[in-house]
Image 1: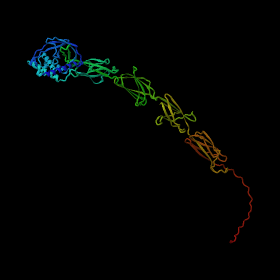
Image 2: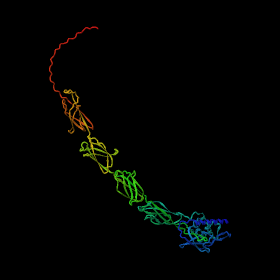
Image 3: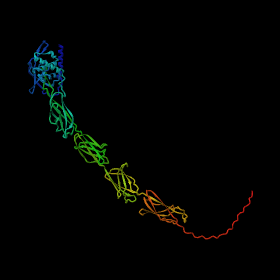
Length: 618
């Protein structure tokens, strides 16, 4: 029996140390000290087994309490061996600096009076409820067996015993603790979203792990001017019922920089707070001080809004082809001068800039491809919050012109009509333009992209050679004047002069070349274009003659030949051609011969035949 008492004392000391040394709960303690007063002795209906005397004795209980702003709250002594209020002991002050933290004792109190009514505890009145709660606290602290320690002196006494058992059972087997952390939380619901053109909103829900009546938004800090709270139906208000969600509205046009707002709420939660009141000396009892079951608990949430959620997309294209232009550099800045940076278009002619805030952005083109005109216009665009703006910017190509004058090489004053040209790119594979000279020998090509080209003559008049192609360069804003000469195609006429027959005068046989024969050549208009004289070989070759038809006329011939009065037509059809023409001349008739003198006849005597000789031997 003695050992059981020692164990109980040790447990009590450990429990009291735990009560005193536990950290204070994060809540507002309504007072620093209070006066514990005697509320009178309770009626005697409960007995306990007094082991030292071996008898059942009545339990004498003084109801004690304290007041805050006139409201009465009850208190329970923590050390039964010390002097407490009642029984002749006047009331005294206790210091309140912390909360009761011992879980079993706290569970005994919150499952007893006044957190539960006398009716809920099954006893007659508040005094009986106070007695039951106080003895339950002792039973937990001293590890007493309720069934053997207590009995009822009457029916009310037995009701008290049953109440003690119930309280102790809840205290020893419960799981609730007084150190309730995070019992009130604010959590975001969904994303920060657009409600209208004027506002964005964030929905919140309030989670509470214990019973709560309602809550109020006490403060909204570090949010833009014009922000306010509403219910889920967008009705502005600050007070909400339990489990009701709320929203915070922020003006769209005020989201200019990142926001980190603070939303504070206060809710009335059923936390069963029990304060620990320490006496000012070690001779007097400390007290566990009950309070309102509901207390105001605060919670807060951080609302972070990223202001840099807008995007800008630039499309740089050719004004003629609509094809993208790579490598064009732009500068971007806000209208207040804040520089965003320089960016270049990619191979698709696109610049994408993310993480921009809303506002007016100034776009300046600072560099483009050589073949394009730099667009010096500054563009201002309005970028709204959390939106993507697309801007198409065109570049005009740098242009130049070509003027072509087609002339005769031999006579630059003579222009040539109808000459056709192809203008090709620098590879010579793609035709850019096809032109034809007018009656003045002129052709022009306007608005050509600058760069290198090939000018190729494809067709000219039949009497001219096709000119050689030219490599040309078109410069920005300039006109390239080209005078292109056409050389006429030329050939020659080769005349071979021979005798048509044997010349009886000269003794020359037919086909003999005849020298010093004079010929004249006329074009198809009858104009004399050349005069030729055959050489000793009977050949005469004309100068270069423009391709075409000609008439060859013999004007003078050799002394012993007749002039050939025929006109001979020849045609030169291609450049460098030598057209051969063989012309024969009849010999002149020689004059008649003079008669010859007769030679006298001489008589020659006949010769006698030789007689046949006789055959002889050797």
